[in-house]
Length: 250
Image (tube, rainbow, N blue to C red; front, side):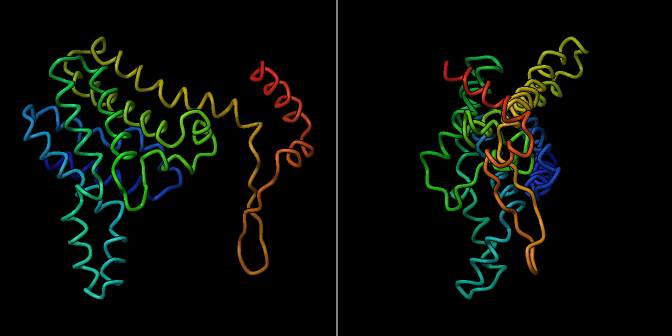
């Protein structure tokens, strides 16, 4: 169990670093989910969630613990220790996710279990106070194509899709001993997640304002171009966007 949680923690640390690491959002929780399936009891599931909240907090928000220690003048190490001790409060969605996933898994199949757990995750993030208001979907921001899907479901929608992809890949890994027939179905469903997000992103991309980075004085800046100015520079997207907007309005 500890090895799976540690591996998910490492993947989380890389994921939150940004850049091309956004792709890890599709698999970062797979090692943890696989270990949860080996802990069939409710106490085991909650213990796994508690340890994962600590690992995720240490991987993604270690700097916040140091900041707390520096601000309160108790030292960075003490601030980080307090943050890790309160990790289940700082990241309560892990406990909600594991609890609902365990209960749903007793009466329903993997699909309902995954949907219920993902709903519990975003529901906890919405209902319970979070200091930084973070969510997994923010990690897709470095991809200009993938982040376009936030038009439809916001950051919470992206988080749900990432969780479903992780569930699909975890289920495929758990069924690997059954051969390709057992693995293919969850793999296809998991692969559909980035496929759907990317398809909408490419569809939406021509209508998106461009944000070129250029040199401004002594530093770098990223001016926001309006849709009008960017479309004027390239008439094709302008005509396409007008047609696309007309179809939506109808």
